[in-house]
Image (cartoon, rainbow, N blue to C red):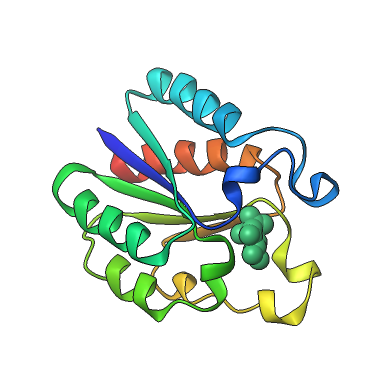
Length: 143
Ligand code: DQA
């Protein structure tokens, strides 16, 4: 089984960026934790990050060919991107949405997610642990 873990804008700065909101773990830590857990679950993980909407869309298209599931933290594009929603709607397998922070406790513009219209499940406010929880759920969904 193969799962692509996509990350949107500013998440390259995870660990340095607003650590009081997002914590001190880096995206590399997240990639390592997911790879380790993935081994136990029999899932190969590839974690990618881009600050560019089109790049994320291209990776979603690539996942159509080479991945069984997508875990995505679209970051700020969550709240703005019909294009990412449309791309995810072309993907046949499970899609799980992750937010490190509890978006519902924050500004009202973070309360709406386009991606949630497609996601099979959403995790928010569990810190970076949310990625591993999503991976466990993905293992269940992929059977
Ligand atoms: C985020 C929440 C978004 O509102 C924000 O724009 C991010 C990160 C999260 O993981 O909590 O960049 O997706």
